Length: 154
Image (cartoon, rainbow, N blue to C red; front, side, top):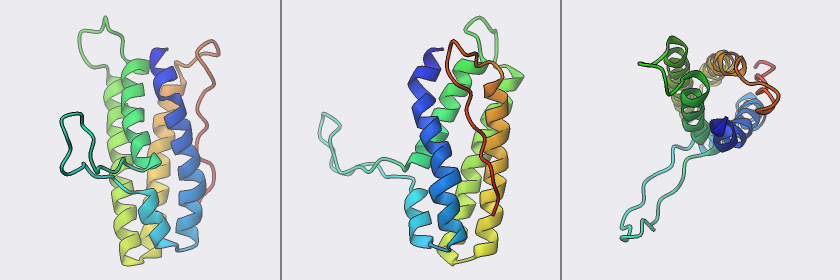
């Protein structure tokens, strides 16, 4: 899969950040760190014609969500399909819900609400794991390793 080559490392890095750094920051109540880990980035202002500017890219976790969507398109959809497959629609839904869970987590962190932050992290973990189980199915050893699901809880 061409999509695995393009998106695999971003997905793996994001999974590691979700299960590692983000989980630890939420558990420890380190809200500034949570905010950094969930930064959406910003478009630059005053960019020149070459696209150079003062923009800030999204965090690894937010970038992972885009990679999840792109990978789902290539892993779950054939160019010969006449429309979007049910599996691809479900994968897109799960990615959207993961992103919204990250938004909820960022809001909880901003308010210092540890219970809400833990709930949002757990909900996001469940959406991410559901997505990974769907896209892992068509990955064969010739393509690469299947993605690891997020273990553990808060």
